[in-house]
Image (cartoon, rainbow, N blue to C red; front, side, top):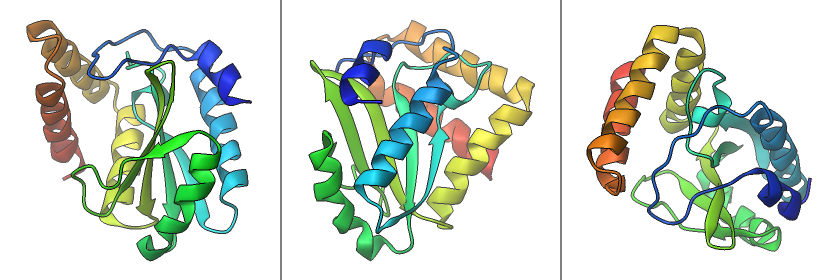
Length: 177
């Protein structure tokens, strides 16, 4: 699937925008297609790829942005993914406050469509991302609590992305601990 086709299906979000939408059954297929596009761009360094985040969990509302996890053997090789990902439309944002991560985004017409989180496979960050996703997939009550937390954050202050992210990270940390 091309970046243009992805943009036709994913609504994405403008910078700073908070919105939750009902789960879309196309998200898993879109994620698989985009992960394949990424693998083809970086065949030498990417050793594992996963669809994470709320768009990967069928019974959750989600921000309409795909969250993808790509893994390298060692973070010292992560720099070798920057130019190939830029060549297919991604922008590198560095660690963005998370040591041990590189964050990439794919945007179209000022709307973010995809977040790519690059970690070392097997690192605590990698394991936490996979563990949280799997926990929400398997524990419906926990997923409902997470869904409600995010809705409450948006309802209390629809423009406070920092508070939303902080509440979400605290919930994730509690679940993964």
